[in-house]
Amino acid sequence: MKILITGTTGYIGKRLIALLLELDHQLVCCVRDIGRVPEVVKKNKSISLIEVDFLKENTLKAIPKDIDVAYYLIHSMSSSSTDFEKLEKQCAANFKNHIETTNAKQVIYLSGIVNDSNLSKHLASRKEVENTLQSKIYALTTFRAGIIVGSGSASFEIIRDLVEKLPLMIVPKWVNTKSQYIAIRDVLTFLSKAIGKQELYNKSYDIFGPEVLTYKEMMLRFAEVRKFKRYIYSVPVMTPKLSSYWLYFITATSYKLAISLVDSMKVEVIGIDSDINEMLGVNPITYKEAVQKAFIKIEQNSSVSSWKDSFVSGRFNKKLSQYIEVPQYGCFKDIKKREVKNETRTLEKIWSIGGNNGWYYGNFLWKMRGYLDKISGGIGLRRGRTHPTKLSAGDALDFWRVLYANKKEKRLLLYAEMKLPGEAWLEFVIIENILYQRAVFRPKGLLGRLYWYAVAPFHGFIFNGMISRLINN
Image (tube, rainbow, N blue to C red; front, side, top):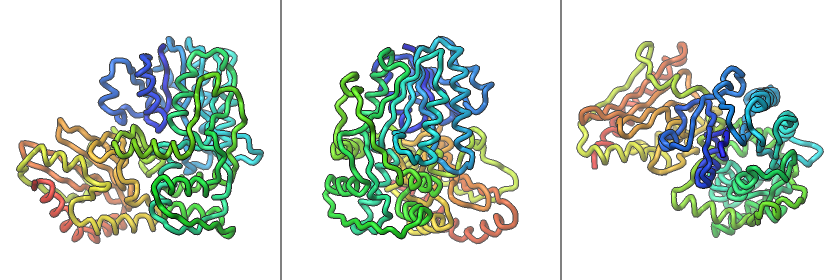
């Protein structure tokens, strides 16, 4: 079948694409920025890529008419926009209006469980999107998922941060909220097996694991899998704002995502039983099994996607192509160059920079900069990186965003997502056996210029040491 995918570069989309390719489907993948798509995807003959922004109706003309099924996987946990509900509804309406002009017989939508009478803003928005997607032209199949557990999922990584860092936790009262999770592998099975199933047309189903757990129970079971002894005590005095700050400072989440999560965690997410498991032959696994399988992926460095790579985890929300040319004028620059002794080894080091490997020199100062960024409301260094040795355009890398990564061209370009009075780029490129390392800062007003002069002595120390380590075996 010819299948349209939205949310192509998202956590679910990346994994669903891999599964549908195994099932020999032809895919049409919608992206807002083709620059974010990995080269391996661009080169796949079973995939067609089209640039589409569902908030801009004129871009939807790129969607072909001869599609059979479409997946609607667009959703943002970001609360940075006060009218995100209106924007999400507009996206859904634009999608529906255009898909009705194609040959598509079925749209499959992944939503959240929305059975509580007091829904969070984001869950209420998902319900409204489902209503908007209803059509008399095509059939809508909706899966309402519980909390998704898998390597790289937001809930998994946040619980991992808490459990692995804190032997004793004094936590907000929402840890006693009951919820039903579902493993990412089971979500993908439901999504893929629903294709063309007429008995699922114009119906919605809650999908969830076999247990109802509180967040506290999830953390304790996570600790059991990791063989940690953890003590968790809840207190009723933490306001939603304090809870958001608590999550923000302890975990790798951004503050705007922490607000959204706390808002959602106050609501019970419990599914309603149906016969969907029997209809599709799915036997959802337990929470412990889901965590165990997630760590197998982590240990093998085979996680396909991570929420940290989504733009909601940082401050960058533009097209990569708009920033890929480093500005030349009105900027401060720190340029170093060294002759490369072993080009292959140097490239390996560049592509492994950050995360657990650190920045090769002055790591203490890099960490201090991360702490300062976190205190000032930035993202800090805690995002790390999804894979220890691979980088693609759009990936998160500590408090940087990868704009361009091409080993054949021997060039890596990063854009700073820390809070700054201006914009910053960091580039590594090897030309004729010379490594050029460029730090470029475009200041914003007087404060930006003062900032550059204040950090210039540290740059001289860190950047000299870093390039020297990169060229040495």
